[in-house]
Length: 392
Image (cartoon, rainbow, N blue to C red; front, side, top):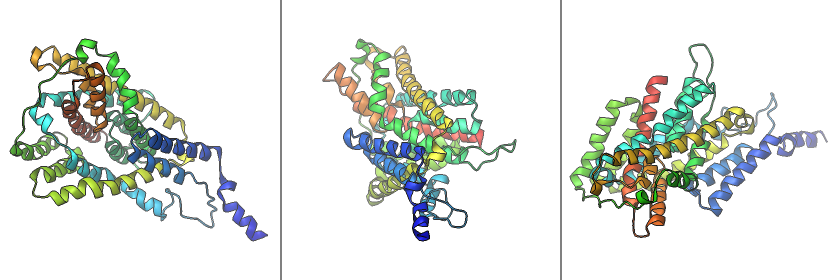
């Protein structure tokens, strides 16, 4: 009987709390949205399942540790989570993204990079908003990057600034906000088709939505090869702290565009990025244990993240309208591609295409929207580097 009672003490039924059940329901919701509506299934399925894994309740008596939780030293999950805590996984994701991206549209129309830069206003607006709500500067910086709609960048910055380890000058330890920040960033990335269209329609007129843009010029192979080399030199001289992200991004792109390293490029954009996506999704989800995740700070982070994403979308659209004041009629830019200035590649560019077709079924904006979209990837990484240089 003593053995049976001891067994019962270790079951999840005996150790479950309302918080565990709430988080398990959240995980099931993520999986439902991914499968039913195909909202970023490659992200939401691993994260949703990870949330369930991280919230299976278990006992931890002082004399015997099960070593199964992600925060227990020596557990398998803690070793997998090491890549998140130390910022290892995000640069590997950027390597794969770089091997996927085609910078041709941006090269053919360089002014589109300004839209990608303008959309980063959401990052800095949220940074100051988080400061006003009482977060420490390091925590506020990590929260602000959610506005870039870039999950790997959000994880990278949170792992450096809001990791529960850094000691502030007054002796205070920063909170571990990696889980809430990562979940918020990936959630809003998945909800791009829901959040962005109303904002785009609100800030544009019917006439503006009908603007036709000139087809981008043909870009030579030499230009494509020189772009990642010049890109890393320019961006990383401005923001050296972004080197782990931008270095891998441009390296992956060089592997693709050089055409002599096709095997490496193929591995980076398929097998490697798939493996890292599985690990990052599962461990980020598992880090949302109820006692760590269900806090007032997490709710504030989700609210700030939503506002940040909306400000970033509006910023890109409004700045495009501002640019049109100085452009000739034949060179005007359709403001519907302004939303693509956030870093959610290629989902925000697809939203531009869908909204453009609603206004005019013959007006295809996807190829134009990819310009500010890839610029947004670079812009969010540069913004992260700037925040790191000020706040580390």
